[in-house]
Amino acid sequence: MSALLVALGAAVGAPLRFALSRALDGRFPMGMLLVNVLGSGLFGVFAAMSLGDAGWALLGTGFCGGFTSFSTFAVQSVERPARPATTYVVATVMLSVGACAGGWSLVSALG
Image 1 (cartoon, rainbow, N blue to C red):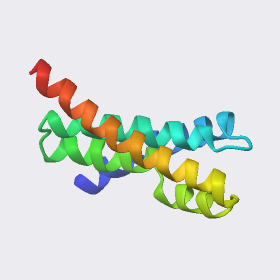
Image 2: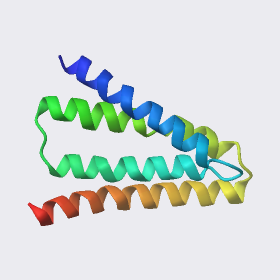
Image 3: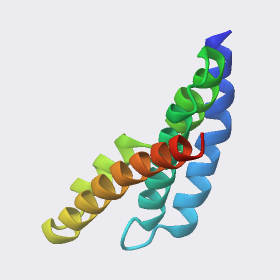
């Protein structure tokens, strides 16, 4: 059952990632940056909600795993000249970790 929930979550997350990154990526991968930051924020929210196994499979592993992409981030990082690549890497890491912590903090403060 968990594998089916992961697949269902990923079936929603992956097309959303594709659409957002396609629409917003240009010379700078703004779409993928946004996707990874949003996905990290949602991951923090879901983690703070203490989802059960089924909820975590669907939303954490499935949706967030399908929505975000480390491999695309890595490829986009090495395809750029050093200065824009450094900006992209630092922005993605800092904003994604901050979004995850912010999502966790928000839900923890509300609940």
